[in-house]
Length: 114
Ligand code: SF4
Image (cartoon, rainbow, N blue to C red; front, side):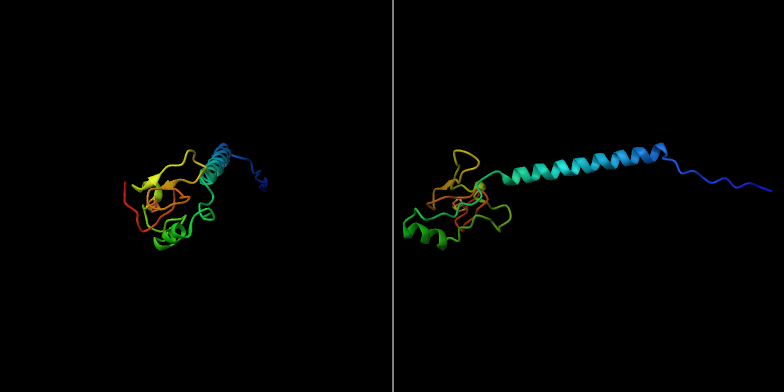
């Protein structure tokens, strides 16, 4: 008569290394997402306040289709010849063509690559 011994499941060293690796990868992914969120948070939240501008300046922004967010690949105010940088990264910038606050990620039809 043969005896049957129950097999005891133990954690093999390879499984522990795998679990450790998974944990490390998860931490790296979390840190990457946190860094991306922090980067996205820098810069002005909006540069659409035209309340201090005269009507003709507001009309010029509208006529040239200014937007805080560019839909043209690679064409953002930050890369435009007319862009005037802000004193700090969290402030709206300026423009040599349009009056008023300009977002570095904005765009208008007067874009000229710098
Ligand atoms: S000209 Fe238009 S695209 Fe260029 S910086 Fe001014 S608003 Fe932005």
